[in-house]
Length: 489
Ligand code: BG6
Image 1 (cartoon, rainbow, N blue to C red):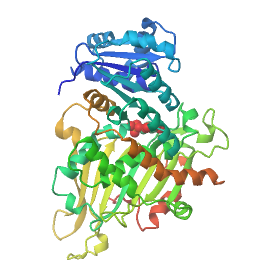
Image 2 (cartoon, rainbow, N blue to C red):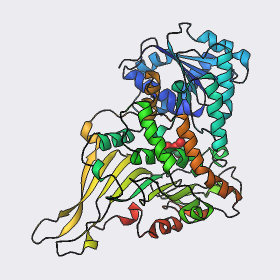
Image 3 (cartoon, protein in one colour):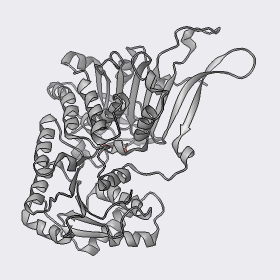
Image 4 (cartoon, protein in one colour):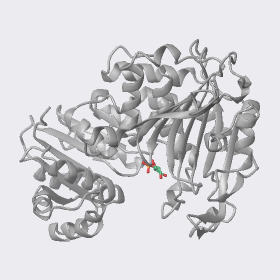
């Protein structure tokens, strides 16, 4: 579907996200000829810069982040779409400059993308409304962190909701923009094979891992007040869990999908102080080696408090109280400075009930489906298969679907897809306000408990898969994380 003409406004337009992700994403769509010829991008920020200064800034800070080789002629044309406007987001008067830069035609799509700290969301929305800029054709995009607990999330929803209707609000979780997440929807609901097995009778457990090699980098100021639970689990991991566990929605329409996801969030078993201590491990990286290079521990990162209790790793066993999932553990895990960068979902099926071969049932690896989001995108289904040659010996083999190999189509980054969806008015891949609140409501007891708890996160060496307590957590159920269970050749 061709896009209609738009004015896209990036608040935080000179910031890190705009430079690293948003502008390169828009350039990629421009080169692909997806943008209307007259569409415009207005970057807004407090700095008193000229248009030339800003274009120079993009040249230095944004262009190197374009994934493909830059086509200089196309890049020049892309820059012609961009205008820099100095606006102090908290000062109503300064919105006059933004009003001047926007086209007056109210039938145009207007998107206000708030790549700013959440403390500014309410002021920006109020000021847009007071300046008459929040038109019926406007949309607002909210970047994370969408609150730091239930109360602050409710406040954001309420304040933004005073100005924009829910159908105009796009809450970003960039994991939902990843190709594989949509492929998971295709796998579950575009095939008849899996759905009958997608339940407690056939599935033994589900593991969802997002592991990163990077440390906290230059984001310590934000991260030390956040930690892995808020930064990754409350949003990305729970969204993946929702897509894996949700009931079939009646259609792909935004509210049908979001209703199904909400049901999962509301069915998550609440933790109590006792179950929480048994089922959640939090860790913090110490020094170690990543890719053979020495790296400092979290508390030695520049600016880190020496006694910081911020967790850089979380592993937990979650449960969903529904007929479909009762008793099936969902192990969730995320961490920084881990042994590898990967994001994957592993659905493990139950073991065979009886062996007819001269091998004990225990020598059969249960079937598993591995859905890879990162670094490559694909699926593998592990089956038991006969080894070639004489005799009947069975071994695990993989049926492999590599999305890139299979489709040979150019890749689309998550932000490209999500920006296009915003411009198209397609809300399916964005969180609804009640979903956001339900996710915070579920993590809140964990946050409260840690707040009062005097103990520190368990240390783990950089370049490992996290603290031993994480293996023990899953080991108590006689299971292993996937990398611990990989069969020997
Ligand atoms: C962000 C977190 O939401 O996701 C970061 O704030 C994290 O801490 C990033 O590094 C990971 O995203 P991706 O797409 O690189 O896996």
